[in-house]
Amino acid sequence: MSRITLRDIAVHAEVSVRTVSNVVNDFPHVASDTRQRVQAAIAELGYRPNIAARQLRQGRQPMISLVLPEIDSPYFSELAAWLVRGAELRGWIVHIEQTDGDLMRERAMLRGAHGLGADAIVFSPWAVGADEIERGPSAPPVIMLGERPGGGLVDHVAVDNIAAAREATEHLLAGGRRRIGAIGLQPHLSNETARLRTEGYRQALRAAGLMPRAALEIAVKRLHRPDGARAVVQLLRQEPELDAVFCYTDQLALGALHALAAGGRAVPGDVAVVGFDDIEAGRYSVPSLSTIAPDKPRLVELALDCLAERLADHTLAARERRVPHRLEIRQSSSP
Image (cartoon, rainbow, N blue to C red; front, side):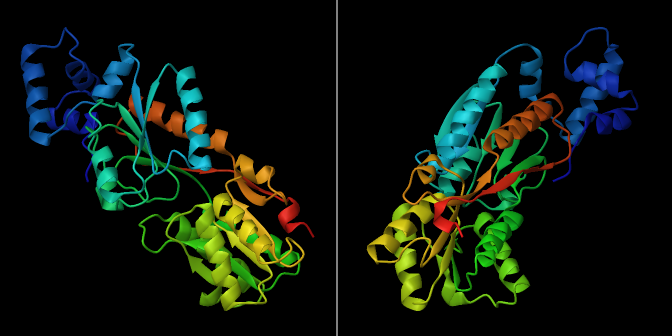
């Protein structure tokens, strides 16, 4: 989708960018014939001004729509809490929507079906395709959270999932583990996160001279504790000598811990476990859960910064922002 900017209008109407801005913002003291020429160029090129940016300049509190797949997921609830706090400091109002990762609901949220007239959308989709997330300069800004490609004028803020998954797997390899399972593949979703974490896991294995094996990679429908428990049972059935598991979320890892204990496997003695997300429950599990900890406050801060910049200038090119992460080594994978 091509972006029509104020400069495009200025060139077409043979005036300055400042003159176009004055016309767009209804400023006085623009000659009548000049105003008509600019308005004709706007109509011909199909440009529409960013209403949210204008309202922001006029002092009205922007309404931000936070669209998440699962509000009851600990990871997303923590993100929501950080974002609400950060938005309040900026004088913004946040409205939260849940999609359950359903394609039709995600499409509806992008169309603004909630009816609140959101000035911008902070969006973590699971199902909708990248081509549907294309945004033009006249649409409310969208900031994407997590690994999800988006074109047009869509900013994207995420952790480096390949690097993080590779680091988690390298940690297990460094502990002498060689039969390492991966739980969390989601081939039924357009979401890129699982694919990238799988890639990081495989890269670490290959670097250690081990070939990835399909029997050690388990797909799940959801990312909850029961899914992790079922996946570990399947892994043990397919690989009885399993000695480590990398789970793509902490909830999956907590389910895995439960199933391993029920099956008489000691953690980390028999099987080491590493999760991803650093949710609070993992810090208080027994054993405590090793995990990849994304910098969630920084993720929210970057998302809000991108949002503020795009509200001020809706013609900015799409931007990629990477969030730091760290490996938290706890009891579930201690040497």
